[in-house]
Every structure is written in structure tokens, then in C-alpha cells.
Amino acid sequence: QVQLVESGGGLVQPGGSLRLSCAASGSIFNFYVMAWYRQAPGKERELVASTITSTTLTHYTDSVKGRFTFSRDNAKNTVYLQMNSLKPEDTAVYYCNAKTSNGADYWGQGTQVTVSS
Image: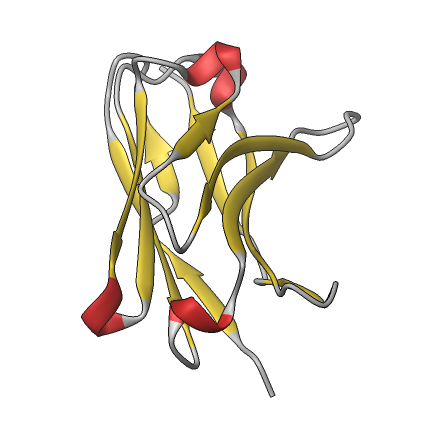
């Protein structure tokens, strides 16, 4: 059974940084796409960043471009989201997501990120 385990959330002041981690139970190359989503209170879940695992291409939503960086350690089966210059509007539960080429969709449990002074 596929498991995605996130860590690294917390409370940070505006302008601060956090790094989220998502450890997969198997090779990340078992998945076609890996992504980070977030959901703020009262809002729909939105895609933050995603990558096709067989490439080095990464997509970012406009609001995080230049501030967030998606990276991965293939040997550790782990993907990361480095978040810099955090803003209060980045406050949300962040979820790791993995999709296979045959349409299976997996989610982590979520990790809370709160940006507040």
C-alpha cells in the first residue's frame, strides 16, 4: 500500500522559511507525477507545485513562483517543498500528492503551515 508521509510544517513569521518533506513508501519513479497542494480555511484545495518524475520539469502556481522550490532526493524516495519569503496568505494545510500513469491518486495526511506574527 502506498504511503506518503509529510513533515516540516509549523508556525513561522512573515518573511520566514519552512521546508516540507514528503517521504514515499516506495520509489518516486513508481509515480508519474508528484505534487504539493494546499488548502486554506474556506477555500478549495489548490495545486502549488508539481513535477513529472521522469523529467526535471516543475510547474509552480503563480503566487509562489520565485519563493517556493520543489526538489527531490530519489535515493530517499522523498520530495521537498522549500518555502521562502512566506506570507500570511500561504497559511494552509499542505498535502503531498502522487499520481500513477494509470490514474491512481495518493495523498498524504497533510501538514499545517501557519504564517503569522
